[in-house]
Image 1 (tube, one colour):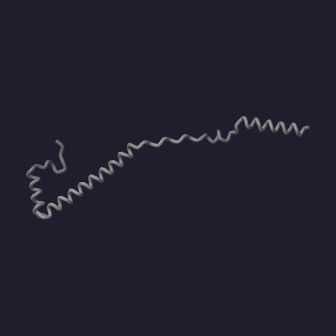
Image 2: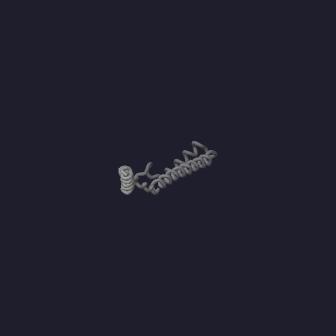
Image 3: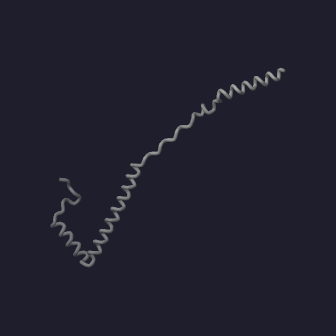
Length: 100
C-alpha cells in the first residue's frame, strides 16, 4: 500500500481536524473560510489545466516543413553553354567582318 503525504486519514483524524478548525476560527468564519478555500483550489486547477493545455499544444504542434535548399553558388555562377556559344558566334562574325 503506497504511503500518502500524511498517511491514511481515517474518520477520527478528520473529525479532530474539523474540531480544531472550528475552535480556532469559530462557527461564523467557517463558511467564509470554506468558500475562500474552494475558490483557491478552483483557481489552482484552472491555472494548472491552462499550463497543461499549453504544453500539450506545443508537443502536438506540427513542425514546419523545411524550405527547399537554394541552388549551390557554383551552379549559379557557371554561364549557360548556349549563351557562351552565341557569344562566340557573334565574336567570330565580328572578326570576319573586320577582315573584309
